[in-house]
Image 1 (cartoon, rainbow, N blue to C red):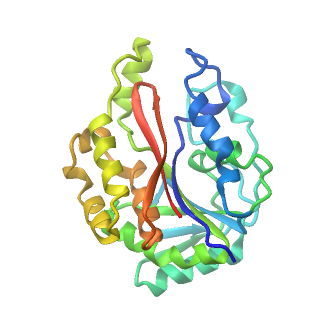
Image 2: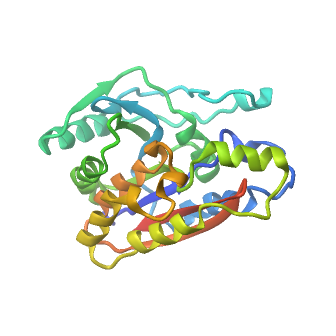
Length: 270
């Protein structure tokens, strides 16, 4: 079976791809990137494993629900955004495999039979895989947000890429919501924040030495404007899982967009 890539995708803000915006093209480039994503894969994935920054547990917890509902874990948006559908099936067998790989690596693992898809999953994937016919399993991050442990998690999950599973980290490369909301309320898009951190992050992810790449990512908070970009790092940590799953593959940037006054990027391995 063809090896599937490991990818980090920015999932936007709330149900952003399903709303009217001013300016109306605010999310067009990001939306087009997601719409094109399936066509860039080497073949149809057997399943998708998604690590979202919107699910934290003490142990790495895998969703075993065979028919996950949608969790509308956002507030204050138009009524129609709470009626979205994305009925992708779960995959309990894959969930068991994920659980076993995590435990075999000596990491804490748990299962959740009731969990649905949060918006870090269904919002971007409804755009990328609108047919919702590929099985999908969500995996939490650990609430300690330790970068080295999340790279180790990705390393444990790497064999799945050779089993037809595309590994997707869903978050944002800039997630200082206070700054972004001030930009939105002010109606100003001229000053873009996050550029210094994005330059550093791109150099780290695309480093040709995988060991050095991972060492840099562990020290992300020392990067220029690192803590400005991520006052709390739950939206960055899925990238560490993806980097761990990359193995010796060299990363490349697949999207750089400017939305809500900030730089947001996507990265891919393989």
